[in-house]
Image 1 (cartoon, rainbow, N blue to C red):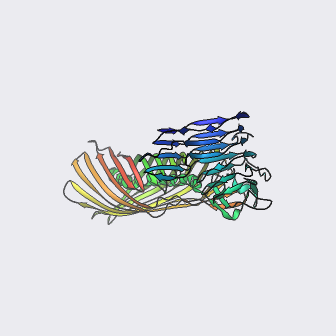
Image 2: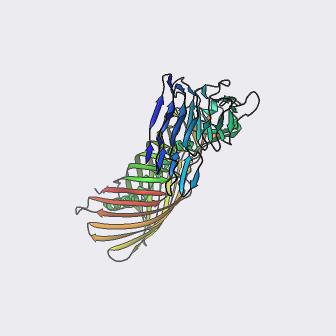
Image 3: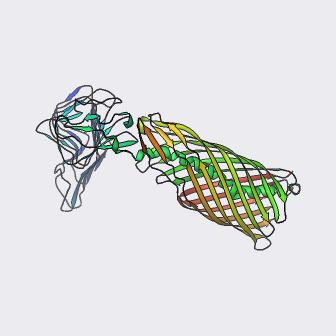
Length: 535
């Protein structure tokens, strides 16, 4: 039997004469999990149980699980406090200890004890071993006199292996050595850890156990460090680089080739020939966590051809635009989302020699815009922009296999630099995003078969290695600064492509439609289409 997801609330200065249970079970094969008891403002004359089981007949193979239940003391949205005359149990079993007898296992673990405001009292014992014990401090509150949770004399708080956190709005705005009175004169049993934290920065502390400051934790900014949540805003910077790289790949993969054909078919290359390329993708960037992106992009330009002793040289300007939406996910479940867009201008060239050897390259510069939002800190968000530079260089050779088939062997280098930028979250934290350098190599081959004078089909594979693309950031909070964890897409990606080129009989228009897939650090699918007009 499973009992989970129940919630019991005591508020409005109510008095409960007996016990309060989030959930309980009196049967074998039972699981009591993720139930909540909230004593927001009132008195309980009995005991408080987040969740529990009373089943005591151990039968072989009959597991009893009481895990991850929650008790809340005090009002999250007001001044209410809780008065408990009995004991408090986060997870409770009749035999209390984790044990095995005759093959039956009792699991009692996890859960949360959340404490709001000052002045909450418990006359009995508090049982929360291994739980997360969270104290919530209002913005600007530094009360050092009234305990937040007082366990009365003669009783104990059992906190062995518990994680005790004091949650504040912005850690860096609180002065060094600020004292928070958590337990007053309460007796603490066990060895919990203590942390003062906001949603992005942690500072480890220790509990004062003797003297006038007994029961207090004291902030020490020398121990400040960014926590896992602080990585989430930096994921957005990875998105911007990935968007620019996607457009560069589209143009380097087929755009340059189609531009060369357009100008080659245009009056012997004596005038400029227009071309356009559009593309889109659904891609996952594995960055230590991961980011899911949906993107689309367009590039337009003109090309001109000049013959030389080795063959012919194509060159021309290009204008690009890209836009995408994303969802980022950390391993701890934090979800961020937003949009990214850019515009850019640049130039490209390709030298095709008579023996099939070719060289190509491109350069572009533009501006990226990113925005981000998440539920961190009650709704963290920002918008920022940065300048980017991108270039690529490649060399390859087209080998003619027979009258209808060719093989293109190539190697390419890609470099993108997204400049540094800054963003102020609505929480007050300032993120200084460092410049991101993406450097990639790609080796591949592409087979093309001419079906008839109007149609070609092609297929290709490639291997790509990303050397960098690490998003470093410094978080400023008040007078203190820490370095955030850095997402990175460094690693290997395998790429495959399949497409068709179409040339209508009038020879005035050509098109290329292709599909791409990738696995590895980048995983997903995409499409691209190129068009050129011959006047």
